[in-house]
Length: 89
Image (cartoon, rainbow, N blue to C red):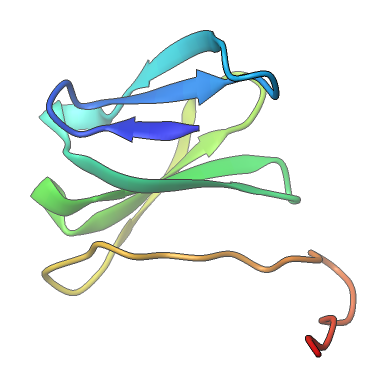
């Protein structure tokens, strides 16, 4: 997945790096970073609206929008949803 900032879209890319589809960020958003969650969602930070937009990983429908402090840019998600966190060496 990748953020197409200028177009306001998120590109869904398959494992071998070819474009599968694009997802428009609502309200002419400005996607900055995207990630996939093991909980079945894809998230994108929206710098234009100071929010994180959560999409269903299968349908690409917006399931939540979370307001955050101004200047949102970086984000991350849990590596192992629902289980203990793995320690890094």
